[in-house]
Amino acid sequence: MKRSDMLAHVGSMQQAAYVRPIEYQEGRTHGLKAVEVKNGPLRFMSMADKALDVALFEYKGENLTFLSKPGLNGRNQFDTNGQEALRSIMGGLFFTCGFENICGPYSTPEGSRYPAGDYPMHGRIRTTPAEHVSSDAYWDGDDYVLEVSGEMREAELFGENMVLRRRIRSVYGKPSITVEDEVTNESFREEPLMWMYHCNFGWPLLAEGAQVVIPSRGATSRDDTTAADVTPWNEIGAPEANKPGSVYIHELAADADGGSFAAVVNRKLGLGVVIDFNVADFPHFMEWKSMGSGDYVVGLEPSNSKVYGRGWHEERDNLHMLAAQSCERKTVTFTVLDGVEAIDALLARRDALLS
Image (cartoon, rainbow, N blue to C red; front, side):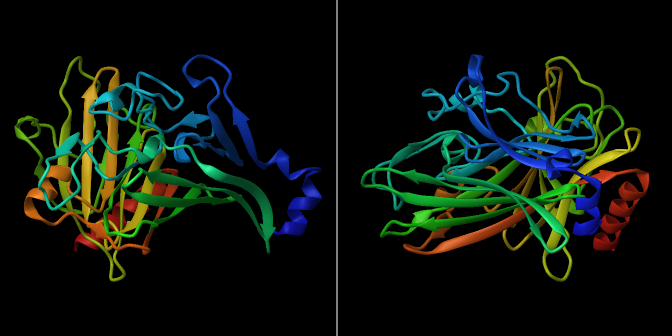
């Protein structure tokens, strides 16, 4: 709809779309600042106090993401050591992993080529509150743009000084959001840069009969537990009590420009969510499939590093490094698929990439 037509039909654009800073008032979330964005039937919450990561992601009133047992919670003093992240990770549409480490915790010993230190599970950036937070809703021609931005600094005295500048953008009438990230090394030495988006999908999108859609040329089990799972990596069954999770490492097909994707679709519900990204930015891709009761989630994880974490790369002397005073940029887009035809089109896109 053109701008003039839209304005003729509403008194305020807030009838259809808005960006609204909020603050939670009770329990684990007390004092947690966030930005609520409504784009017609699409509604999401960017957590200002947790790296502007997107937690809730709803379409037509249905939440499409996984929310872990701790639920929404603020930044805690206990969640940046070892595996303490398990008590604070919310899940949500995505949380940002890095920049010193992804996946399991690791300690770099003295005498290594890399700085000695202790690196917690999935790193520290996801718990870093945003500064210079800005939110806006404005017309750009006939596009009504909804935007959230801010920056997060991961820094230590005598250590790293990494700045993530993030912009999240959505356009009214389009059921998608685009995350544009830039990481700058503002220190005077090269620094490790491990970078992964941990994207998490849950019920009701994730249910028996749903499907993981990835243009995968091959899937490798991370460990013996995964290898023992007889269910195909792309099939979703019902929750099972105490079922261990599986992790698959995928080799992705991509188009001539490096474009690829991963998705969860539910034909019965007529909905899906697809993540678009470039394999040049994310040469590694992991699928975390947890079918355990109460921990029922599929994680789709584009990454610049292997799932085995920092130690694996240090041992092979191929930890990704960012030069002093330089930056890297990455973009991911999340789009809701509405209807069986949209799901079928995605399956055709997968097949074309694999042909």
